[in-house]
Length: 138
Image 1: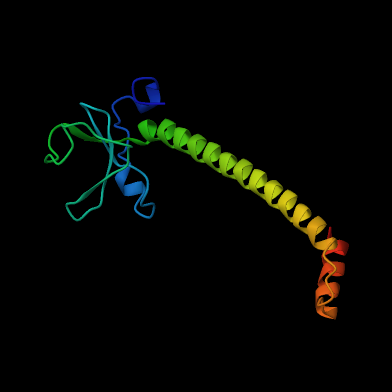
Image 2 (image 1 turned 180 degrees about the horizontal axis):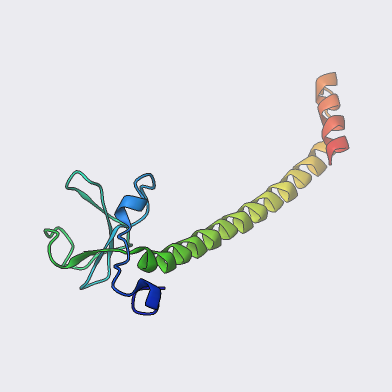
């Protein structure tokens, strides 16, 4: 909701993001009006790109009139999209980890099958105990 949609807020300006987010170093505070790149002003005169990329208007160019502070209302959808992206990334990692764990388990079962047939004369009691323990775990 902003001043244009709420009669109670008429005449009020939505607060900028910067004072609200001093502790969160990943949240953007500004946006380029030309290319839409998101930036974080670090407070010491330096800037940190928070988008995947910036165009020539922002790439190694002085921050000027093309940069505008983000308001809380502008930031909410950006954070929601960032959260969705991170969630999808974590779900992908989980699926990859589960697939790798299953392949590893299949490999270990195959190795154990081979190891169970291993009965050389030089097998020590420790070798036989290890095989017995592995068989009990599977």
